[in-house]
Length: 439
Ligand code: NDP
Ligand code: HSE
Image (cartoon, rainbow, N blue to C red; front, side, top):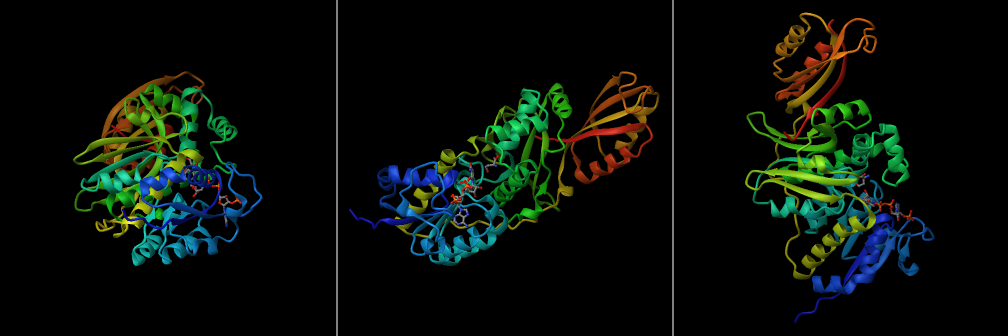
């Protein structure tokens, strides 16, 4: 039997994820080696502060602040520092020296992915990133390998645990957004600065990665339409449940067919029917719902974050990369052959639920229906509730709440409809506009 030399593994970062990856390699190295066919030598772990407390015990002699030297001479580099720099420079340096790189860094991939994939392709190195989207959940490899013979048409993902936790608390416990965020912070789900989560930046990075992979097309981060959850109110969540929906922050990647077709990626809060599998994703869990032409609907569910959970995905990549190192052959290349047009949100069609406060008198419904008709938006459902005197925006004037569900309409037509409604004399206020997904 051929024996292969031990592979030199370097880890950049020993925080929540890196400390767990180091621990697994140190404690279960023999078992990982059996799966690979070669030993793994952990040659060093780069950190900022050697004396900082760690979640796991890492021998002091392995810790270094000289990440650049550590990268040189490694066969496999595991980047778990996060952020754009120096992560990007170190990853480029590793790839250029022929090392395979594993990363969980969605910000770096969504921003510098093309440059990094090109560098890997130049030298035949591999760049693995299973942990960059939805933590422990296997979703990158299923999209890249298992579904490689199929045609993915749509992805609906709950890919941010913090916002799912917050929306779930608003729905199931009745907290306001501010209260739910405070709970998420107290329980350690939300960062001290939760902007990336609640404003949808984190989910948008993941959407760019998923859309690029699923549609074999580079989808830049700035082409991802992004709305966070900060404008979602408790009233909207309550009304949604009454109407048979739950509010979720979704990352949606669509293949849009037709003459002006292409692909689109967007992140925004959406109404999801209670019977849809994504509606049952509670707490900080993640789930990715994939629709493919032959396979039909598939759902991938589990922990989207957490040190040890995310380490599982990283170690799967370590074994894959190391196996290829042992057996040889080309690395896993980025697939961008389709090179489809990346379309703006205005090209998307979906359904909408619009809530209005209107005057309650003869002719109002006809006037509202006329606005929808004028913009080519077809109304599917309409429910009216009388607002008790004195509670609406118009004081003692008779008023009513209208909840209007539309058939599929384009974003552009819907936006024009909302603008007209806002300026219409019978409309006191447009209380809520939410997209409906998963029907
Ligand atoms: P942490 O902030 O917990 O850890 C970052 C580590 O990198 C620390 O050990 C830090 O050193 C080290 N580091 C940062 N900058 C430098 C630098 N310039 N030079 C040397 N070392 C540096 O991050 P996480 O473990 O939470 O996340 C790591 C990556 O994994 C990120 O890309 C993140 O997006 C991704 N990820 C994280 C998940 C999670 O649940 N935490 C889930 C999925 C992905 P020191 O300790 O000395 O400060
Ligand atoms: N902040 C992210 C979340 C961590 O809440 O899901 C994983 O990327």
